[in-house]
Amino acid sequence: MSQVLKHVIDSIGAASQANAEMARSKVAAAGAPVLERLAASLAGAQHTPRPRAAKRTIVVVAGDHGAGDPGIELGESHPTVIAAHAIADGTAALASVARTAHAPIVLVDAGTREPSHMPEVAVGLGRGPSGELGAAMTPVDATLALEAGIALAVSLGESDVIAIGALGLGSELSAIALLEAVSRPHAEITERNLAGLDDVELARIGGRAMGGMAGLDLLAYLGGPDTAVLAGLILGAASTNTPVILDGQATGAAALVACRLAPAAAGYLIAAHRGTEAMPAILVHLGLVPAFEVGLGHGEGTGAAMVLPLLDQVAALCG
Image (cartoon, rainbow, N blue to C red; front, side, top):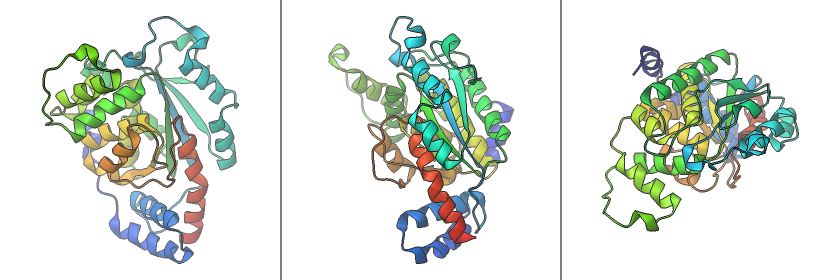
């Protein structure tokens, strides 16, 4: 583990339960359980009974996984490229929600398959897409991506809250594998005909096989460039008492890695919605109750951005 990473992890303390309870009690009179939970999460993370939400940023990290590699060059027709351009040109649903929430969007290319076709506004932080599960990244690449995420969090240091989303093929399989690794690390794996299993089951088996590994190794073997940058962002934000709003399962996978490296980071996370596929189980593992009991499937940040107006209400009630 690098000295930078170790320093950031060591600087993350537990969220303030006292401030969380003070803020929750202020909001309780409104009779809105969702606002109470958000008040507690926001105040606990910011270590103040008067949480803030005026300065906010939406960060969308793009990174493709080897598990979702189509095997051919798609150029401007690559799904990650198409989604990134929609965000950049303002036609994506996220862009509309972000405008309403008065939140700027930072688009990051952490390691896409077709980087030359990504929007010019995308900030390049990665070293390329990941490989197959089990050999996704080298520990060096994983460390550098974590440090890039930490640096990104530091650059956003004036934000009261950061909402995150992710783009990239194969992220769902990576999320499943990481969830299995952290939740069922000692599950017995019996020999079977692997050729007859689908990608999801193979991801589950691969995750269980690596469950005993340390957080950095799990990230390197099962994660992707987006996972690493987002995990680093979560760690960096937690070290500066900045709450992070999760969206879909790719952001949930990053949270699993961040909390494996620094368990106290869980106190700085807010879940926007239940999500789909692996996300509900990820939230249970992290001990998070989502603001919305709906399953928004894309996870590119729209769900997380939808929470921001609710935080304005929380701040007003606690002010």
